[in-house]
Length: 178
Image (tube, rainbow, N blue to C red; front, side, top):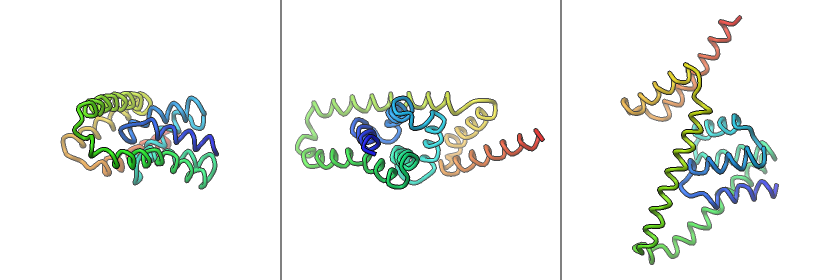
C-alpha cells in the first residue's frame, strides 16, 4: 500500500500540465516499473477515464489502486496523485501574486508549457500506435476526427458513437464467424 501511495505521489509531484501530461509517467511507472497493468489495460483505463467525470490521471490512479487493493487502494492512489498538486498550489497561491511579473518566472512557465506540449504529443503518438489499428480503427478515427473538427461534434457524443460502433463491429464479426 505504501508503494502504491508513493508511486502516485511521485507521479503527481513531477507532472506539470494536467492529466494528459501524466500519461507518459503513468505508463512508465504502472506498466514498465511496477507491472501493475499491461499497456492494453492502461489504454482501457485511459479510455474509461476519458468517458467518466474527473481528471483522467486521477481516474486511472483510482482504477489501479482499486485493482490492487480494493476500494481503500483506490482512495489511497487518488489522494496520493492529488496531494502534491494541492500542496504546491497552496504554496504557489500564497506567493505567486508577488512574483507574477518576474521575467524569470514568465520564461520558466513558457518553457514548461513547451515541454508539456511535447509530452502530450508523444502520448498522442503512442496512443495512436496502440489504439488505432486495422481498417475499422482508421474509419472510426477518421469519422470521429471529421465530426469533431468539421461538425463541432461534442466529445461525449463522439465517445458514445465510437463505443457503439466498436460494439456493433465486434457483434457483427462474431455473428458472421458462426
